Every structure is written in structure tokens, then in C-alpha cells.
Length: 628
Image (cartoon, rainbow, N blue to C red; front, top):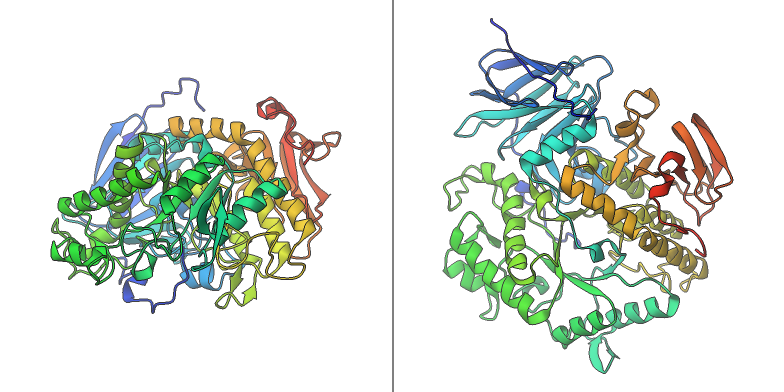
């Protein structure tokens, strides 16, 4: 066999939802994926950048930093160096839904080595990108939307094996040179789409409820409204919580699943359009739930019209490969936005119920196997184009699913990360642990603005979990609070229901998040220009420090703050590793430390360990913790 190398010159230039009540159908599971076809052996050399191949593959140098590999086979074996770490691929902590979501466990980390990872979008922690970054100093993106598998040194510790379904145009992937993580992400997002810069208001704290109770009304500013909305707005003002974004989740509309059409359900949200205006007048922005569905059978619902026109595939999903379906849905979305004044969309689902078998043929001729992962992109792009047509650049999409390129149109929340398991009956702190990992996984994938349902979507059963999650969320770019059951400190799910201590913690961290707004927004601007994420896993900034290669329980929030969340119930102290440099305790700046060092710090329930990186301290706003 002959070897072919592509050498690459270095041009430095100074650079070094809602509860699942239905039975899960088969497309909630990945198809029969495997490692089939002739093997293409690959070796990657980071410095100087060069690719070696053995087998039926061609190499094309795209520019000084990128090389494309094409083959008729989707089976690669990429050599792994001793100690090499592989980062990225999925948002969820491990491949399986059960272990990462439905019965979350204390497993997983940043380094994926030793795992088998499927590239098949599954709900509900549903960001999947066929892109990884190696600690050896390169990244690799598989192009297209066909599914596949990564065996990351599980079967053979010396190899990362790829097994991919080959599309009509064959298999292709692109190797991207670094060596710095930020350089890899810069070149990667230049290919796939720079992260969207959200409006500044989107980075303020959010509030929502999984369901606002029907038939219960109160009056606000002379307008009859849903009582839960009024309760939230009035208590925020009374208790001194900062205003931000109010999210109206499903069910909100008439008909099937509370989403049968784009008309407010009068039994749940009377005077819906006037409600939006009243919230605007009080300083809130409003985002509303959306999906790729045309539901229902009644004449007033959208399902019959969409099905009669041949715009639906399966029993509910719009076929976004059909230009007529895209135009039809855009017309409905745009009309609602003009009428209501809503500021954006929470885009749920799209990671389920889209027919995904080989016999499911979409309008553009592709089968469901090829469309399944791509459906996410088509869905989000439709809402993006429709909303931009009405609102220009003053809007937001916050999507649950994601695939290659969707970061250019939406920010992301972490899906149904649980605060409780076993159908919400048993509280857990493992969901918060998984959220800390997912936040950093998203940095490796080029998704800079991310957050979780604070307290867990399946709502917390232990106030301590809520307190710790509030503190963590304050140091996420997106701080949104809500989920199933009570997430309000004035109406807790356990005694004391009106929780004075929790009210103080809630106020402290929502205000702290707001005080970081300018700092966060500047980082979001940087991310939109270069792909450099807001949150850095510590390995980004100290790549040669073996202590941080797989350290998932600390991270940098921007260049200036090291955050060390406490996630385990009962903990009132923790060890913190401080990398090289000088550090100051955020809560007591008179306490300074010289890294590298491991220190033990106190962590009372109302305090998250955070340290200021002295050399970057001038980037922080003044007085961020005074009077909290």
C-alpha cells in the first residue's frame, strides 16, 4: 500500500420542553450502525500539520489549515497517541439517553476516549455535531448528515475508528489544524457558520413555567391574564428580582397539545396579544414555544390544511425539504409575530417524531436515514428566516436540538436535564453535575451561548439542588429558570414554601448574572466574530497542564473568572485546582493564591467558589458583588 502525505504550511501571523407521556417509537433509537467497508488508515501530525493515509481515499488541501479526505468507504481508523484526549461530538454526558437523562448517573467527563458514540440526534439533550477536537492539536469534521459511529479507543486503545453511512456523493471529512483550541474553532466556524450574536436582552435572566394553569385568571394593568404569569411578574417586582425574558411554554395555543394553531387559547391566555404588550411595558421581553409540527384534526387546527396540501411527513412533522411546506409555515409564523409582538421562539422537539427510516422518502428524494440529523438544521432555519423577515435582527431563537451549522441561527438550552428522576418522584443532584459537563462540551462544539432549566426540567425535590443550580446558572451565558412543578422561591415544592433564604439566594444570583451582562455580551461578540466560546474548559488556556486535561468540575467564564460549582448535596466545602498564575477570591479579594495549587475552600449554600484571574481582572465590571 502506498502512503500519501499532505503537508500544510503554518502561517502564524501572531497566532499561537414538555413531559414525555407517549410511548417512544423506534426513531428514538439510533439505526443499525456499524463499522463496514474497507478500512482507510489515517495518521495526523499536528506540528507541522500533515495527514497520512493508507487505503482508498483522496486528500485535497483546501487552504494552509484544512485538508479534506474523500472516500467511497466511511470506515476510518485514526491513530491515537498515548494520552491523547478527544473532545466534543455530543452535548450529553454519555451516548445513552437512559444514563444521561432519564436516570442520570455520575458518569462521563470531557475526554471521550474509551467511549462508543453514535451520531444520531436523540432527544432531549439533542445537540450532536460530527466534530471533535484532539488534544494533539487538530479538529475533524465529518461532512453531510448521514449517521455513523465513533469508537474512541474502546475496542482498540490505539485507534479512533469511524464507521459512517456513505451518501450518494461518498464520504468526506475535513481535518483542521490548530494547535490552539481557539484556532481550531475559528477555522471550524468559518466553514460551518459563525455563532449568532444574540440581542443583549437575551443574556438577562429568564423566567418560565412548564405549564401555566388554565382557567385561573388575575388582572394586571387592567388586563385579564393568566394567574401564573401575573404571579411571576408581581413577585419579581416585589422581591427585587431583575426583569429579563419571560418564556411562555406549551400549551399556549388552541387545540391539540396546546399547539393546534397560532391563536392564543382563551382559557389559558385571554388577551394574549395585550398580555405581550403589558409585559413589554413593564420591561420584559417575551419568547414563546415553537415546534416543527402541524397538529390536529379539527377545522380550526393546522393539521388538516397541511396534510391536504401534502406538506407533512409522518403524522405531525412538516417536510422542510419541500419548498411549499417551508413557505406555508413561514407565512403562519410571520403572521403570528406581526399580530402578537412576540420577541422570539423556544424551538423544542425536531429531535423526535421526524420519520427516519430508509422507507421514509422526503420531498427532495432523500430517505429518512439521511434527513434525520439534517432535519434539525432545516427546521431551525425556517423559523430563523421567518422571524428575521418580521423583526430584523432584534429577535432570538433558543433551540433544543442542534447539528452542524445551527449555531449560526440559534442559541441553545440543554433540554430535559433532570432535577428529579423516576418520573419526577425522586430528587437528584446528578442532573446539575451533567449540566456542568454539557456547558463545556458545547464550548468544544462551537456553541457559545448555552444554559439549562435551572433546578432541572423534571423539577428539583431538594432546595439545596436549586440553590446550587442557581449559582451555577449565574455563570452560564444563558440563565433561564423554570421547568415542571414549582421553581419559585416564594412557592417552593417543600417546606418552607415561602423560603426566605432561597429568596435571598435567587436575588443574589439573578442580580449577579445581570451585573455580568456587559462582560458576557462582549464575549458573545468575540464568539460571533471568531468562534471563541464564552466558557473555556481549563485545558483551553493551560493545554500543557496534565491536571486540567479532563477536569470538568471547573471552567473559565470569560478570561477573568474561574468558576468551581458545588453540585453534591451536603457539601459545604470543596477542593479547587488553580492553574498557573495569580488568583483572587471573588468573594474576598484580599485572599490571593499563586497557582498551580490545589486549595480547599468553604462553600456555604449561598456561595459558589469563584476566583479572579489577576492578569485579566481589568476586563470585569466594577462592583459585581457589592450589595449582593
